[in-house]
Image 1 (spheres, rainbow, N blue to C red):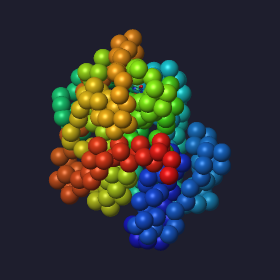
Image 2: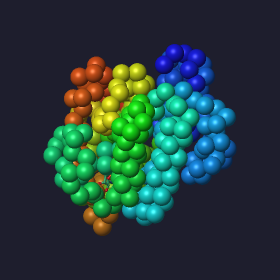
Image 3: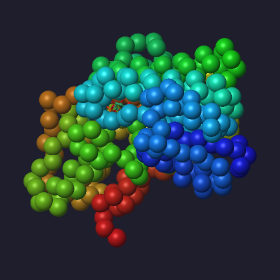
Length: 308
Ligand code: GFB
């Protein structure tokens, strides 16, 4: 990408899109195009086509998506399937119609089977049943991967798919009903400390294991892959290390300085038992994450909860 190439970031107000925008700006890209969801509703095919007709971007980062934690995925199942299918279809098809030089589609580690061998290789997609709580989201993301793969096969489009592990960072969602575990626990422990509560409720059994990547590392990987990777197969992005939800809760409790105890609510779902990504493919290309988990969580906690 040269510094004056026109780059469209779909979803620039979200956690991932805003991190990609910061990274591109820091790297000196001068011609970045964005629209918020009021200006351009990506679910509407005609609106997307009109936007591409006017702007004709050279590069597209497709980070727009309806996302959420385990409960949001399991509750808003129709929207997670429909909205994500429509956004991916409309943007990928318009990118083909308007000759985009390269497109990067953001998927998710939940595209892999619930009981995939660990660490999860890219080739395990579609080899087994999905985790039921996020099956609609996963199906939409698998469709996005397959759109990229097949527009490449049929038309030679340089469309790639990137599968990040669980993410956290600036601009995360801290709503306790719809967020992912890491922002939820930061907020729960912080509010419990402020209120002098004796306990904090954490969902599930604490035994599932997750891998967490700071979104600034994902943004750096996306910019790297836009330059270095051209293939129909998805590529994983993660740290290569995971921990149990119990261990995560203890780390966050310590960072926040909450002195009470943790109460486990096993009426809430655990989800996939483990989803550690095999990151050897991106490591072999020369990219590694930079931000370690404890310092990453500390920085999010300070920025979001500690007044300056
Ligand atoms: O982060 P999370 O919502 O998503 O939950 P998934 C991870 C684990 O943390 C589950 C537990 O075992 C939860 O039960 N957990 C404990 C909590 N306390 C909490 C809490 O207060 N809030 C939340 N949200 N979880 C999502 C998928 O799965 O991961 C998406 O549903 C997507 O589709 C995303 O793939 C990355 O890792 O289980």
